[in-house]
Image 1 (cartoon, rainbow, N blue to C red):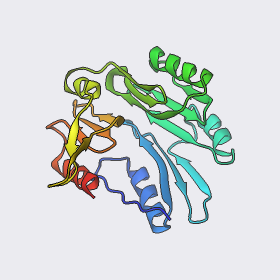
Image 2 (cartoon, rainbow, N blue to C red; image 1 turned 90 degrees about the vertical axis):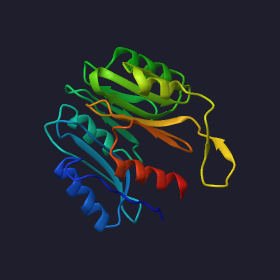
Image 3 (cartoon, rainbow, N blue to C red; image 1 turned 120 degrees about the vertical axis):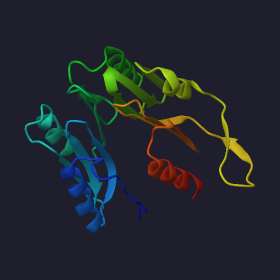
Length: 214
């Protein structure tokens, strides 16, 4: 069995996605993957109590719906879907399939192809405001189009954190994920700790702090 909690601020996710997530909670479905974009796009992959995967997305007329229907029909399909601004989107399937909007950054597409050729693995891809991106994979991580504090944080190495009062310091670890808002707010998640810009809402910062301390 999987232990999982979910929360979001009011209006923070598309209403249809919020309703879908609540329905999955009442049915005790585990959420394996969820993503959404600023224009109301969303995708969710759930697993029911019997281990059967279910996939949903916001619009059957989405440019990649045909490809999604094909890939979600595959047994044990692993999909990672990312949405960016200005209509950018990217779908990764397994270890060798991907498709995306034409204006997804060429550097990101090149890295994904090289990883597939080398039979590497991809942990996460994020399409960020202004055409920026972040990818964490078996060869490390790469980002482009980011500056200021968030770029400095992603480049940081060797940080030590104390997971609880009185406990010895441990390495913060590699970057696992990053989120950047349209207003420049950012959160960087590492293996053992996180950092966030001062503009990130206090309830989210507190929630993340509790998560890492538990």
